[in-house]
Image (tube, rainbow, N blue to C red; front, side, top):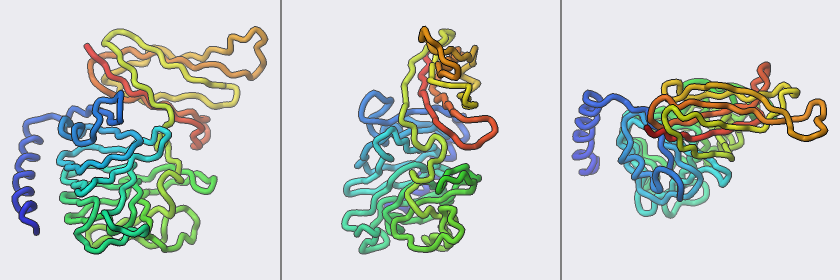
Length: 319
């Protein structure tokens, strides 16, 4: 084991133990992007985060060397320009937060790798896993992109609804590995053989294609809007809708921070209203207390699990 690991791990464990005893989880949500977000770099968001916070990283290429030393949910968000790419120049992404979750990223191979993800040595990797974590729905250049020093979970903990080859299915999902060349006999988009990194790190549900092909709900949200609100001052979100088709918007939000005061549909203002014409669904929310959260909307029929559209609104509430 490298000298830095001998020094780093004991100190890290003491820090994590102290934080778990002294701090209660804030469950805050922050966002990272090139401009207009809470942070412009992933590491700055990680440094400011508390245990169990969610950090959303928008589309872009992030060349930072990262130290993920907290139990956070680090999630990539495709805002229309592709999945965010973690490609540290001359360094690594070190996943050293016990119980952290890494989801939704494209993770390149180390410098000098071939397109198939092969590198010259096992220690020449992009992602180093130091403590147990959960890693799924990411795209890896290959197995050599990862140095797993401790046991991690490489699959979702529960089944996820996904669409593959025009069929809605449900399964636990793993990651896409560019150097995976096994079969998929039942044509469900999941490889028949696992990806074995070592005896403690196995992806039992490897994806046959990059994760974007599975179109999981909220995995690709092309409309992401930031709303700045104040406590006890209602705000409205309006979305195009047509209830005559059977589709309707359903909102999922933090009931601790927000209250849905009303939801109603308004038809088109056209002078010649047509039967079956669309209109707007308007939702009024009342901020209850300061904080950061995200409101998710899903547009679907109640009797189907096919999602026609999804929207997300990041809300920052001040006193």
